[in-house]
Each structure stands twice: as structure tokens, then as C-alpha cells.
Amino acid sequence: MTPESALRAVIFDMDGLMFDTEALNMKGWMAAGKRHGYEMSEELIRSHIGANAETTKRLMREHFGDDFDFDAVRGDRIDYAFRFIEENGMPLKPGLRELLAFLEKKGLKTAVASSSDERFVRFYLQHARLNHEFDVLVCGDMVKKSKPEPDIFLLALSKLGFAAAEALVLEDSYNGIRAAHRAGIRSVMVPDLLPSTPEMESLFFRRADDLFGVIPLIESLIEPVTQ
Image (cartoon, rainbow, N blue to C red; front, side):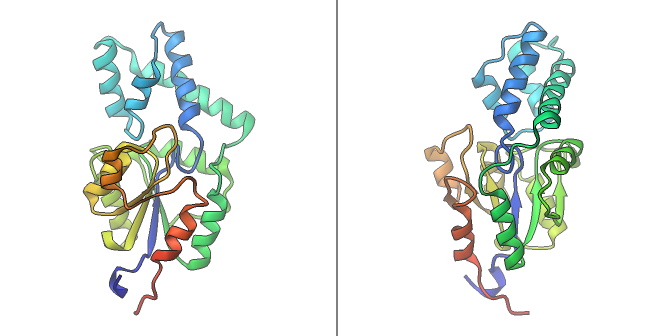
């Protein structure tokens, strides 16, 4: 790796990567669907992991029909998650605090690039109490196209002021790994609800079992940067 391409920034997905919220959201979708008379399958919910609200709405209406009241069901799903977090705290993924402390020590910039709307990202970060200030936040309602399109990651790069070769994406979802690949950024998959597949292995740079396992991977990429 040349000095010009030394690692300078790490871009985090949020749900399922930083926070153990994908499982929480699945329970929320199922409970909200049942309340409104819809049977939400795990397969359907998994199909939109990593996607923004508009993509999720399209996938659910393709499944249930155009009269599916997406806004009402989603509203109940959001209430379910917010109540849980307010009552129980934010469920952090193992190794998150340690990884963020390591990145601060090494002087690397950090960004969150999530398909969730900005209000969710800020709510989650506020309740997580991470004692870490991310340099950049890019949310699903800031771009027109959701993951697997690269828009979220390209905007994060632009705000960070770095080239794709200087960044690393951490993702748990297939759509996120595809988006990072299309943006030309190396990615590390840290599986959550979705296991690694041959397709993902052809797209990501490395895989880690958890965020603790990301630390030595990043350490191996750090090179002195000449000014």
C-alpha cells in the first residue's frame, strides 16, 4: 500500500453493525404487521435489510399489494423499537466501544453511513452514549438512491474529503456490501442476521466475526502517511 492510499477513515453502517437493532426491528415489524392484519415473514423482512424507507415500502407493497398501509405499519414498528430503547437502553454490538477507542487512538476519521433516516440515526447515537463524535453522518434521507446503490458511501467520502482507496466500510448487510463495492471502497463484512455467501465473498475485502475482530484487520492496513 502506498502512502497516498494509507487508511484514513472508517465508515460504519449502523443497524446490525454498530447496534443490535436488526433483530429488534424484525420483532417490531412482526408485531406491527400482526396488529394491522398482515403476516410478516422473516424472509420478507430480511429482503430489505440495509435499504431505506422508500425501497422497503416498494418491496412490501409488491408482496402485500398496493393497498398495504406502509406508513401505519412502519409507524408502529418504529414505536416498538423506540419504546424498547428508551426502557432498556441501546443494544450495542460487542466490540463497538473498543473499536471506536482504537480508531481515536490511531487518529482515523469515522463516519456513519446508514440507510435509516437522520432522526433515527441521531436518536440511536444519543441513546448509545458512546462518548465518540463521528466526523460525518450520512443518512438514508440525504440521498436519492438507497443501498445497494453507492450513493450513501460516495457522499460519505465526499464529506470526509478522502478517496475511496483511503477508506474502509464496515457492513453486515448484503445491500451494504454491494453498495461499498460499487463505490470502489474496501469493505469488511461483520455478519448479523445475514450469513456470508459466495457472492459476498467475491465483493468484500475481509470478513470478521465481530467488531473485536475488525481491530487487527485495520491495524494491518495502517501505514504512515506523508504530508
